[in-house]
Image (cartoon, rainbow, N blue to C red; front, side, top):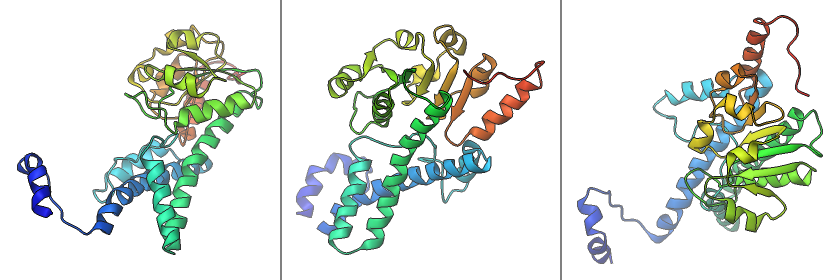
Length: 282
């Protein structure tokens, strides 16, 4: 069998792709264990982002410092809304199921924590959106930037962005979702939400903007241009990808996940440059 598979994969082997021969049990576990490890890194830094918000630290600076350690690295160490899609959630739950069936409780419990932290990021985002709306979501016009579970795809499987959008709508908010590729798929799955293919139209009269999928076109949005469209210049960057000072310089209130210390410092700095108190968001 090894020889037959070597013949099938000969072009890849000739290109220098590593070859590993193992038993069936190991082969089955490799992919799910690898994805579970990646999911663990994401959930770890997201858990730390909550600790950063509570303690006054900045998760972006913290993760950059951690990534300098070659034993850790900086890949999958970017705090934000968390993971979705058809691989990581499925594989950690598959690993949990297998571990439970075999009586390996520590793996089952560990993967349960990883999964719970990931879902908690969505809950945190909804809660922070409520705070930015003055404590009441009902009747608020909210624009969601992003529907796919990650950029450069129309895949909406277990999309954190759409989960958050649905939760906001269930709380009574008037939610408009935009995405460069996933609008049609998302509308079929979430008919209770309003969708706009154009980000410009989606931003019109918004009282709160949430950046939930880090498409390049959302990273490159003009703070001044977006500010001319919305009703309130308040944005929750749940992917921590915007140039917050540039947005704040245009009068935006900018919040992230694990970056509240940076927002507070910027607010204090701007307060020192103007006369009178800085107005709170309406």
